[in-house]
Image (tube, rainbow, N blue to C red; front, side):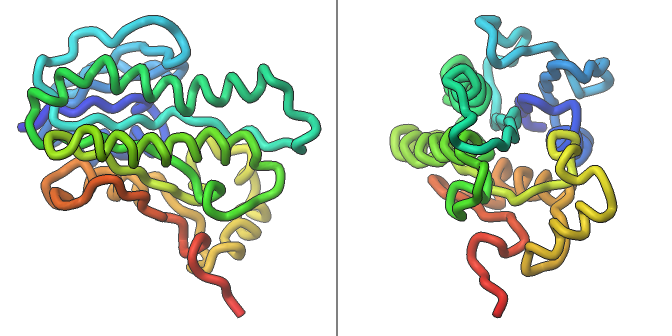
Length: 230
């Protein structure tokens, strides 16, 4: 039985990942607004990634860490204020750095442990109004590769870069059947990603099935980043 820490595991992809891992592992899961109660081998605690608080009651030895908090704030470039940008970076990048730093000793004790981060298709595929999310998640991709080099061979670090996924975070962008259909049509696979699909990708990167992978950005995006339909 492995010990995994899932930051932001109370909804969306994180909640789906908890469901996929909970049968055979000890999970230490955080929530911010969507409160959950601990049950069995799933242990919840409140954690605001933008605060100075630290995680509590984490085992000395952990085998994997997934950082899921993120933002999708889309607006014209000339309307972006410095405070808006700083807020996005605080959640997307600084929170991840702070969490990894705190848990690094635990990950090292785990031996061949894994860190999974999340980016976005908008980093590699230019999209209008995506300046804040693309720049802050682009920093996550750079962090992924730098940490993978620095922490090898003890800790693997990989990143998933999805397209728009049907989760509460993206609810405003997929709030009607018309919006979902329009989004699906933009993808070569003609579907919108699901939380379960992305959770399965994260599970793969956490486990020994991906033991020869580090420093990778996995584009689980319905083909959007690499295929042009003609």
